[in-house]
Image (cartoon, rainbow, N blue to C red; front, side, top):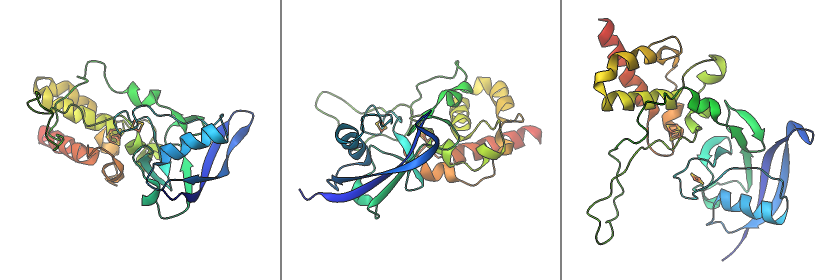
Length: 232
Ligand code: SF4
Ligand code: FES
């Protein structure tokens, strides 16, 4: 295994210490086949135990490790060092959220507009293609959205139009509508109110950065069509 010299350039924020936030650089050696999250783990163990970032699953299922890597929203746990051309890897927290410390943001506003009566689990079409193990007939996948917040961070509308429900909420609302058409009146009213679909600028950034193929922009377009049909 040949190690590669990299520099992690991290936007640090801690009240009283890095306030206002500023970049700090760390040099380390990393196996290029490992991930940015692995590099952060090494850094925290070897150089700075105060470094803050979130993770749980290490395999793109929990959404907690989303941050901006070289300016783009990605999951640190599946972004390999060798897919980043530069040896300086710049890390910053997601935009559109309040930073709690270093790469950690406060996700509570993200959930505030997801109504508690929307079903949490929804079957989805994207199913793993590897054969299931013996004794298991087929894989069933539930819920593509891993609530990482990447789409909200990449959306150019959220910072300028305060109150926009945002791509993840509108995608969840659209999925709920498909699952519960009997509730369409109420759900479409939410999608069409003054915090809803009409604020979307159709930049499509949300679909570009979504790591799990939710394509929020497509859901927003579906909502737009349904709302137009209602008013005609
Ligand atoms: S829609 Fe995609 S980018 Fe947005 S929160 Fe869900 S998984 Fe993340
Ligand atoms: S650690 Fe769970 S998605 Fe990255």
